[in-house]
Image (cartoon, rainbow, N blue to C red):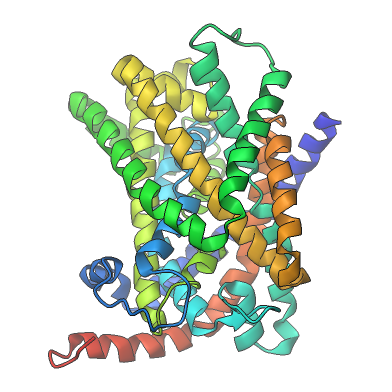
Length: 461
């Protein structure tokens, strides 16, 4: 049964992803970058001021602050995709896949500026009357009724894409391989289904205590945990890189050259390098997927452009910093060529090779934080999709399904978990990118007004 499920998940992912989606995500991101006149980059200092709460007002509509919105979104993006996902990108697509992850982040900065500005600009109310944001509400409020099916398409695949398949799977793998196998409690190289189920049940119970508290509880947890885990992870990686600094130029050269040759992939399949790099980049920073705009759509603000500016910081922190740190660790250690491991286990081997047991301990702490906060945030995303499709009174039903799926994800293979999420993310990107491309002039017009106020010295913004 599990073999059939894995085959279906893999086929689903392969069918959904293709060169056409590269054009949509990378091409769309490039369009936003040039169409905005590179404004997202020019106003980075102002985005930092917004993040620090300089313009916050408790009277503005919304549930959470700019900082909590970014922390919640980062809790969803800064997760196992940064640890296990980067390892998968190198294993399947070679070092060159990292270059294409970087490209998704650079154009993703502009994409998030547009998608998250729209999430505030066209907020809607759910069946209980609460103010909500996200691609489905944008499509319903701003596009022709003929295109409303795109809103239901996004929400339907969001129910699947926001399930904690990859996070729960990799967290259990980390517990098993990094802790219990290393301590000699479990035998290496042997399946441990009973351990997986028990660990999945424990994670599910812990997750439920946060998830059933709703967005505000998730945001409070994320705003405390995310900054800590990001600094700890980056600081640890920086120590490892500095101690091997002479080898870093060769690693960067390998990433860039392999991005255009595919030599490190069997058969030199360049398309595999590009496709898998974009896949993992999209999963890592979620630019163009639409999930992050549900968190930013709940921000307490009356200015859509402000939230777009805050949101655009996400890909820079997530992919350009944290994913790069993981990639440098794996490539500097050389374990990607010799260990035969994949996912979080490969990253663990890299940390151990470069930093010994302390590195392994720090990685485990980060894995625990990364995976947990992502599970919390994804539950909110899925709940929003369920609320849009079935009514706000059905939220609790989805949360129970979500909690149950944590246990399911703990026993399926890594390939199955990846196939489920990748396929759903690809199909979520279609309505998100189409609606954003159609509504880009609205964002540009609002941005022109807002930036005119910023540039005017007499402005009180």
